[in-house]
Image 1 (cartoon, rainbow, N blue to C red):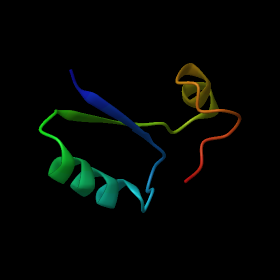
Image 2 (cartoon, rainbow, N blue to C red; image 1 turned 30 degrees about the vertical axis):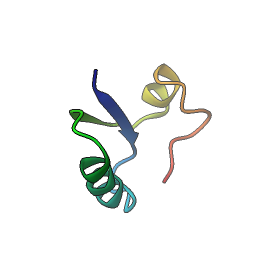
Image 3 (cartoon, rainbow, N blue to C red; image 1 turned 135 degrees about the vertical axis):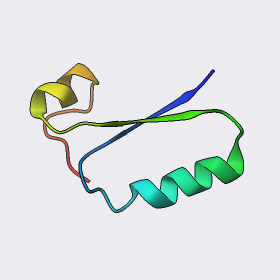
Image 4 (cartoon, rainbow, N blue to C red; image 1 turned 90 degrees about the horizontal axis):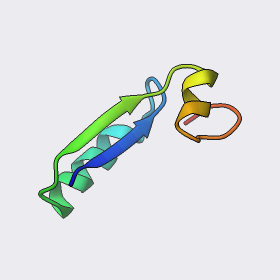
Length: 51
């Protein structure tokens, strides 16, 4: 099992989230940066990716 974190470019919330996940679990964490509306739609993020 692994955790997959979806983010937008330069999201200021990503680093603290990754730190908290590292403290809370031993699961591997994969980060996927979504930088287009097409990518957002592919991952079900809604209308427009934003932080």
